[in-house]
Length: 269
Image (tube, rainbow, N blue to C red; front, side):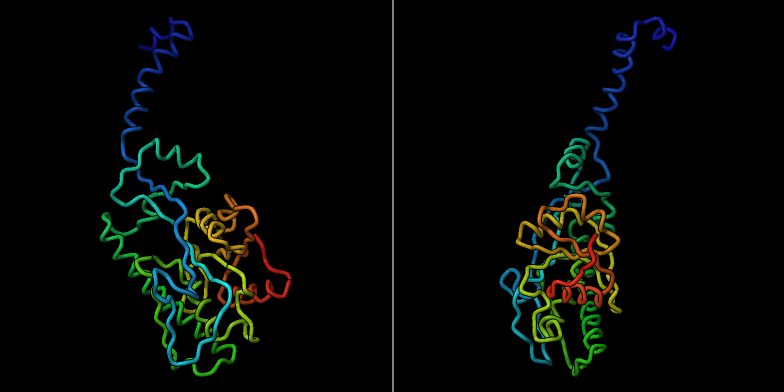
């Protein structure tokens, strides 16, 4: 084969060589690939309601009326059993409202919809517990009494995963203590963002941030709180007019929101 190609003119040789390449691309184009294609999902104001139900129900202490919104953000991805092919991947790479992600980063557990849903809802329940512990720990450390009697119930319907943790903590703090000086933690703004939270108040990365910034801007947010480690991802497709504020802990997030309301210096990506 090589000797015969060597005797051909360059155009003919390329044409012959292209035959198996075209065949290979045809096979790859039809074969399912280990990716998921994500796009901006919904957002939910943890200070308000979601699907007609109050998101945060707090008992054991009086709560305050709040202004502004704290919107946790989501992405929507192709399901674990859905085949993603080469054309879908190429389309996702060239669109700003799509993101191509390794399937195991979106669905780390389970290979069918029911398993994934159960896993994600379990993550959400654990995240709610950690968010409550982090918020009440923060309030105790800042002199708010009576936190030992407080119970919190969170309801975000079938939204799963741990990425609402930071915003659930912020919502609890805002409903119980606001900015600590009688004002709202939001300053009346629509604040959106994402991030896991540990019981000790550490903020962790989540993935899909470039899609979540678009969901935030679409739903009226002007500020987006992003785990510091994901600043570059958040900047990749950042909508015009959306301010990115990197955060690492619950305490530093509250400090940043207070500074934002006062017009003071706030960290940026």
